[in-house]
Length: 77
Image 1: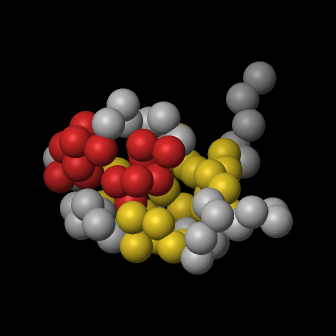
Image 2: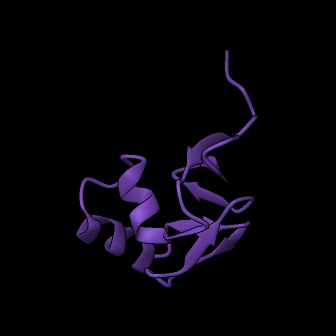
């Protein structure tokens, strides 16, 4: 049984770099791998393809990678 609700990534700061978020969630095994998948246009932020590896994302943003959407939340969410 699958759910359409997004997964969450909880961050402890106001913002985080996109490549760090992928690594934090285990979607990339290293920062280098995260930069490659972002550079290859395999990641979307808020529904738009993102190629900036150091793009700042924050609470309320969403990341889509390999067909799965992750909602960025704060530590108290």
